[in-house]
Image 1 (tube, helix red, strand yellow):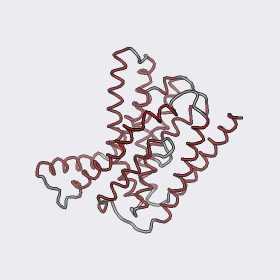
Image 2 (tube, helix red, strand yellow):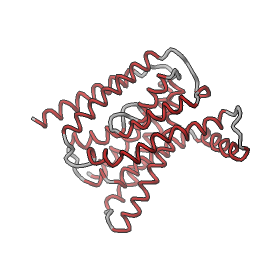
Image 3 (tube, helix red, strand yellow):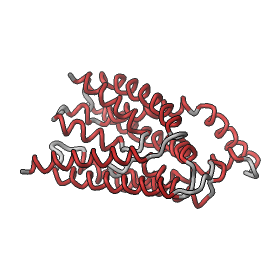
Image 4 (tube, helix red, strand yellow):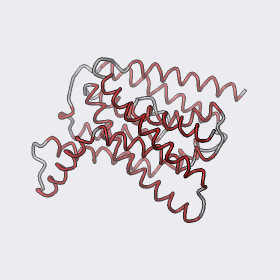
Length: 286
């Protein structure tokens, strides 16, 4: 049963990390709905496995971009010049965009953990998360509908990257969605859908990597003290593989989807998900 649950959550992580529907919310909601109480699936090591899987997915899908951007970034340092090279600019803009999210993780991650990574999760916390899911769904709808310009990735500037970076910082709260917040910000800034998603996905890699390295350090410390159990390590590869495969397929689907469709359907999904959470939470309170 534990292996099945880990596979399901791995698939959900891969699908929801890159769609604007909040992976963190789904990883909380699914166990909450079905009363999966095993602490292993809510452990730090399993969470790291899921996120490293999606990190691998975004690296594989955009590997040509990463080779080009990283090479250009190092050349900009060696030559002390950015110039008109779009890849050099993009490399520095991605780093700049990561700063707000990194600071938010350091300052607020502990508070979020105490509210949502405990069992049983307080029903008030779930209700608040449902409200956030609705709010971001509405903002996504409005930003996508009103975006009347078709700016491309190469046209992103310093101000744009900072705004998108601060939007990503909001994803520390479950229900916001890292991709949802950054794509919404990108559309509000006039980026076309594909460019907004591309920048969002590229931006997710360093943030996920940074969070993963920090968590891996904590895992090593816990392993040295014997605080991590065997079952946690046994489901690590299951979650990793499941999230990597589903994440890779999701990115491929979403990038093609955005060329012909709006983001309205994802807003509607968020409204339905929030309604489900509210109904269940209110029933359980009663």
